[in-house]
Length: 471
Image (cartoon, rainbow, N blue to C red; front, side):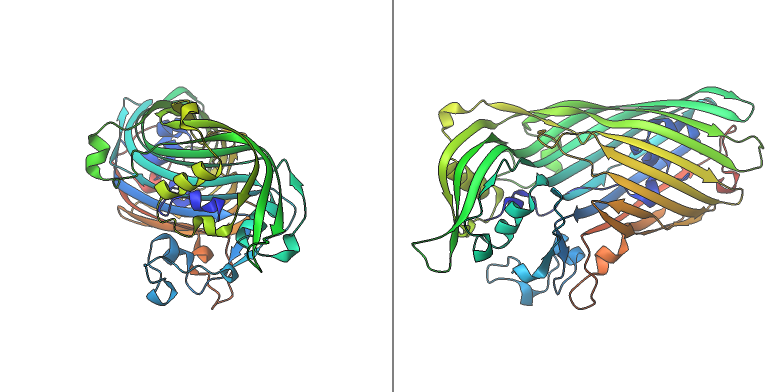
């Protein structure tokens, strides 16, 4: 039994630090702050696409004989698979982090589709973009609860320890968006510029699920029916549970993106402001920006229930035959004694709203440094995805045809080291290099994984902007 089994197998993105923080990032900079569109050195910027896979958590360190990259991309060797093809994932493949803090876990993936950015006059830049996002999260769970789940309820160390009010949430979401962005310079005099930006998004939701625990009282007890097995005795549970069924009998494909009747629709916005100072036209540039991104939500037609039950019994074998999300939902619905007559029929799932701050310094010749911060603005009990809070230091070198950056970031209580390369239109990188490599064989014990690549390039030059070396 695992609340983590609510997470999708293939899922959604992080921050693409090397691309998002680069002066050559074009329309990708708008995902950090739409005001940065007005700072672009290019008259045109075309992105053919970008892909990112990301996972992080603060509960376990990874120590399996195969890498997280292989696990997330489905490339686990056959000797570590079960007869049915599923991954044989042993408890010993992870090591718990017991520090008394609430536990968060995120797996998400993102495809940024074709996008175009165009300068209109000397002060205004507009952009059109598209992307597909999918994510799964556990947020705010207690160590004690997750330890019980990890041990499949069979550790006698956990027996007869009462636990109450373990507030947490799980959320999954898969949706597409098309967006229009505008960046405009409202003031530009004496080497100082003030810029504002806005992005408006139309959202189409394909699938979503959530469980928000508002109060849980339980204990793990030895099972009198089966020796050496424990069970979870839930004395009381209160919360909210909802899901959609649109993708239960089909895979997400190009056809499903443009046809059919998806269950979710919504709108979203990004708002930003930025300042650039360059007293000497040929000297260093200092920039600062602030934005709130992913304001909004998706309204879904689906099953939604209020949960208030007592005296429930869970054993690890409840989920032994689970093979897909529909089976997971059916087991949860049965164990929580959900009455279909109480179906509310719809729910709203929020976007991962965050406050984004950054300060950037660049010298002539292409050497630069950015300090960036993303702060999650969603509450633990929200029916919404969360942007994990990130503090990043990103040194870089940029020239017209190539670039490299070495982002160092702090996410979910752990430091990560990344690298990003650009050669002409090709971008590739990772915000967590050691997460790609870590296995029990090399002694690296990462908390997550991150990798991205894309094709994008700018054309032409604008007056009134810096980064002459990039033109």
